[in-house]
Length: 243
Image (tube, rainbow, N blue to C red):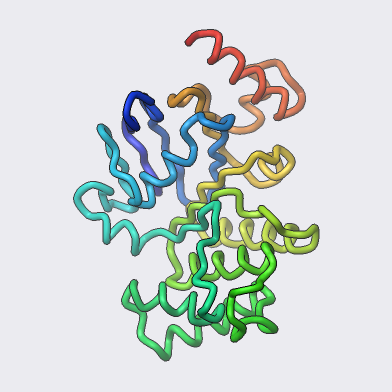
């Protein structure tokens, strides 16, 4: 479970987060939505301990991001918006490097990498250098890296970026499978079709604050809109009108 409590963050005079609080429960996909500049990426970076909040905190399966950042990292898998692979390492080496940082032993680590290569259809490239990979291949390797230590919490930032139709469909099926296994999944996307298909709960951030939260159906009902995209636009428009 991921719990954010009163997160605030400024960069100079720019207040990126003013007050962000929400809960992403186990066994559900929680969508983190908002327009560009709303604070989604800042929130995610705080949750996976790349940034420290100015105020507030977050707790992931009992580990506090402020007092136990290493404990948090062991409990989460992260797919950032940029895959960030080492180009001169093979896919296997990229994944293994992260596993070793988290204390995985080599025999178990290599077995897990082979398992993920099959799951994500990476067998043909697993021992190739990442330099020259397509965007879809980079995303798959980054996802394997996020899953290598079998985390109970998964943070996905635009996970289908650069994937073709078949790869996108396979990723959706994997996300639903992980959800059924009780994994907590926090999922950021601009594609409303994906959000509608995957998310059990939605948290909408506007101008650094949580401006709406609930199930997709609850958000549609509260705004009087049939389509989730229209509900999102109305929520953001109302929030901006109150600034």
